Image (cartoon, rainbow, N blue to C red; front, side, top):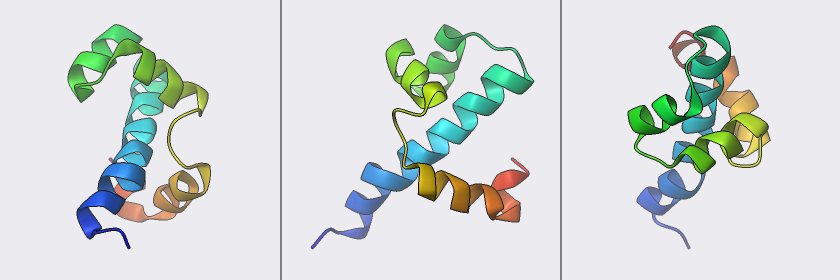
Length: 72
């Protein structure tokens, strides 16, 4: 059984990072290396978030349906 902190670190945080990375890259035209510095991850990780390799797509979709997350 996973602890709440483990669930957050393995699923929720990557999904939120994916949402932020995609938003910063597409809507604000910020480069991947700049996004990586903002999020505290590598440029390769940001690339994976943007391409949909990291972050659970179903969870990302659920989060985007939430008003608080969608309005970030």
